[in-house]
Length: 319
Image (cartoon, rainbow, N blue to C red; front, side, top):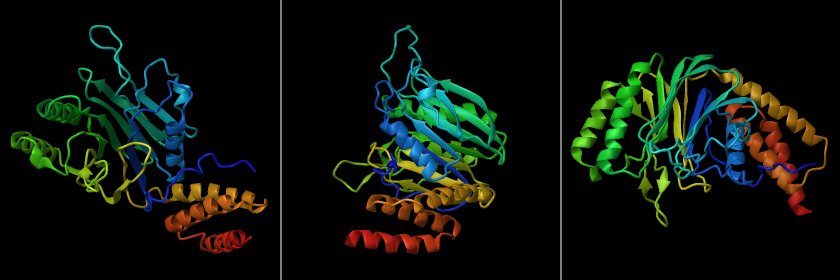
């Protein structure tokens, strides 16, 4: 049996609630200018293992010459905004770039995408079915002063509010540390908070998204803003080692998409039956046990599979 090419990754954390699952990750480069595809594969696995419906990626560091087929993921539409040329016509070093994956069962239209002066980038996607929500993905780079960063941020929110029709989810690498707002000029912080209050947006990420090297302290640079009337059942951070930014995600709309999770659970059940027909290695059993435990958390099913696989793993370990 062929080995699961994603088995080297640790996906022990992630969403557990049913609903619309939205995530974001600053990958610090997908590496597709060469034959290296590890981070792109990581993104694909994250989306499929945790049943994300919408997943955004920042700092793709892609340029137009990278074929879109290399970023596609089966079962998802992909919208890309690569870093453009400078105003003087010279090619900027690969940096920035945002991308968003939307599940194929969702009806959506891209409303707007823009890059401001080679710095802040954003994209607005309006989903109309099976839920109604406006998704905004943004990357605000750190290579400007605090004043410049806040100015870009406030101008961005002022610009996008006219496009809002449905409840809103704004997510991205904002590069403003909400864990230590005291280090910024108070006038900028006050303007930021007033802007969010006027737009009736609430910042949902409460945990550190970027750790300081050799420390348990860090910054909240990656944010998720949602309309205050949206029901958020879960919002958290996934700790990973493939970038110095962690993944942020939220789950909303409650049980509206529960059947979608159960359908994907059905795909897992089919794969489990295929595995049962073959001799499994200890590593494969460990992977299946992880999958069964995750699905048991999501749907309250597979408890029997968990017990069977635990017994099988114990037997293999004693051989």
